[in-house]
Image (cartoon, rainbow, N blue to C red; front, side, top):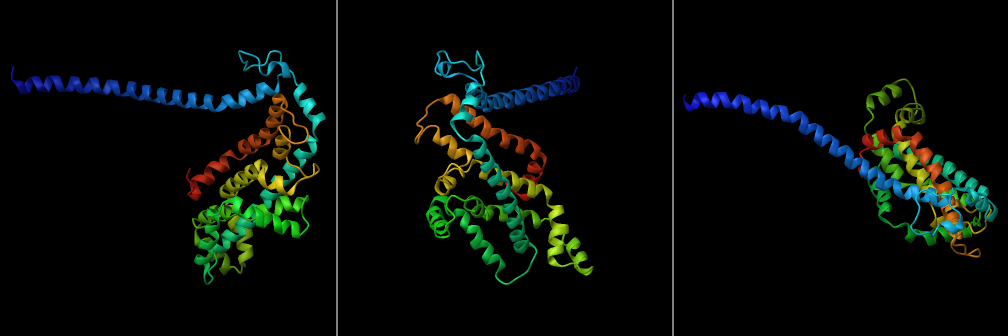
Length: 298
């Protein structure tokens, strides 16, 4: 038998063997990928599980060795004690009011600014946008003192307008929505102009309805940022009537109470995290679509 005939007999068998291994290899790689993602998810969930478990423990079981992830016995006394220690309902209302109203204001102002920078033509538009965008490179701590001086001169210290109004202007929100507005076809806008629509009508009835994913993304970012904001409310909200949850939780470890009961701290952290989790779960689809279509990458 010649070498050529032998090669013809061996080659199909080797190819068939390689083809039979391909589905198994793909399945193994897929299972390995899912296992890695599951392990990473568990690593991310462990701090939340520890937070929830600690909030359900009493004080004598917190520093117990070996530590217990699942509290035994479980108790909700930390939450009732937290409600007795601090005006947590008032702080929750303040955080919710600041986050909701601030988010609505930031989305509206950013949308109007983004429409002006992306769809309207005026002299110096691109230069002004670059200057506006350059403010993102300025750290928040640099502008904190001038903003506080302005709020003090306006006599807005310990007021809701001091907590909400500075957050309604966002260069990031304007940039995010501008990138999305640029992807919308101009033919729709030109047809509306031919029908006699004004710029405001086009913005309100055409641009905004088509920008749901981007608006949802900005709303999630804005709500999470305002809900977790600590430094600015610490400056302008010095009375308990205007304190937000992050400032109140910090008072559990320092200040006049000087409490170090970690079960109370974790109970307050659970109360703080739950609204953000609900908002993200509700707006998850719009958030993912908005990030994918606006060009924002992690």
